[in-house]
Image (cartoon, rainbow, N blue to C red):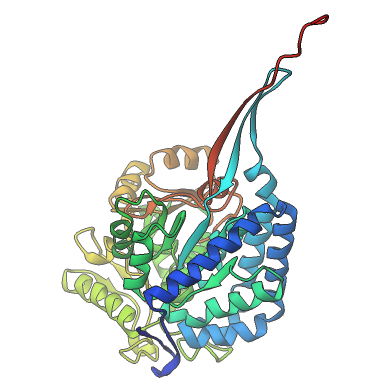
Length: 465
């Protein structure tokens, strides 16, 4: 067994630790999950939906406890109130879409034939959730999977150890049968072995590209369905007709919120040359107004990164850019940067795609800004990436945004907003960002499989025979 330890970014001390399950113990828990799933599948969709939403209600009731607990685990300032607003929005949307997402596709219903395609649960679904938005990212799959009739096994990130326990608590209190939802403490080796055992009908992983590769290796030859949301380097383009103030306010928040640790956070910005100087000046003023400090303090607007090693990666990217000709416009001395998890934000200009900060996922409070002269140049630079999760376009012309969007290699095209998951739209990506779909009606396709019914009805005997 392995001891899983959460080191708090607030003070660098151990905040929580748990013993991981052995492979045999994990297999026993999965046997219970498979047995529980059979009975859960036979419940009506309305009953399953009611139980799941009752658990979400309960999560809201304890949110005041969760907010500081989460700050201790991963550093988000308490002033932002946690994640329950997003959890509520996504859960309600997926519950509302369940009837449509799970409805049979009827091809024929006649005196001779019943022909239809139904959606059947995958069985046991494994959710491997990340630490940056530990409730919302987990709920994206947990809610539709449970409503669709699966049982769910959650393996949460070590950095947010207590989130899985909290979710177990609310699903238990909501009357979801034991085994239908299971939070398991698993190390990487046991997780890989369980996947290789063909223990799951579907595995949803959110994390790094290397983590996604490890999941694919574990699943090799098992034909297990996978959903992988991996890295990102999300770009923004500010055209010459954009609302400049709105663009600066929104994009800098999208780059810096949660200390830059957002799956679809803005990591590179391309601004039309006519607006470039004004955009940069306004961005610097916003960033210089941030307060870096203890996330338990209501005055703090920028907390520590979740772990010192994550901050070290951002420092490496920034140092590489500066060494290769970039200029950093934010004086780190203005902030309480401790060289560890507490990292000063940075805005870089004179950057190029030869620099790591414009190519590799930084996942921290640093953003590079480049001037461009045309839509075509912006598209070329935005597509010059191994990743493709979202792209943010700023213009007053929706037709122009749609035209640019069609040339973008990305999963979601935003116009005049960023860093948001619309639960009624499909959440997906391309290239090294991964594969699969979540949220929306299409999210139910991942957690179910198609089954066809071709039913030939007996012919009535002719009269007189």
